[in-house]
Image (cartoon, rainbow, N blue to C red):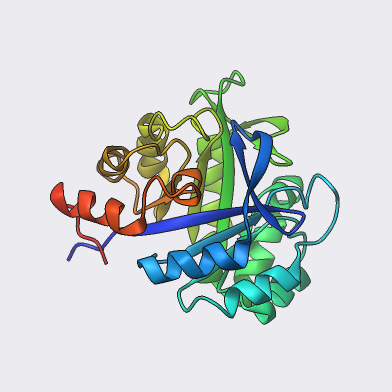
Length: 253
């Protein structure tokens, strides 16, 4: 039985406001997270992802009050990431209304964190967020970054995905920094490679500019497609994307 693909708007939040840039740089204001969350819920979003993009860089916690207010407006799964460093952070986010928690930089610094979260809360709660760039002299040609894409590691993105799944990650959120904000389409090569190594769902992120960009991401192996700026600007609605997916023979919710 085929599993329906999910369409997920992403709220990149800094200072309590939704922001959006290109290649993770030059962030600009895109609106109020609570208002946008409510709009996307009403449009038929399957899930919502909330990423505090400066929490790690600023060495602070996620803005829990914004998470709580967002969760009060939407009745679909809410994934929250940014500044998550411990199982206590996860517990607090779940208590604030999150259904799943995304972890990136802290897990790269201390991979055992993944197992600790999965053991306590279950793999279904744990989303590994990978901010990936091309290059880095890695075997796959893709390298993992930390701190909102600002710090490049020497870790091969595919090797890290494999290890994270073994440690308990229940889902991979694969962000292409090269494609981010360009509106030139998802990085289907990256998605395909991740699909080959992943035994858990893969969420494709970065590069959506038109409805025609979404079906190729699913064809490449994504279980869900995530976008931000095209939804924030009103250029596309959740319904627009789902209609295009259906037109291309993709099962949607």
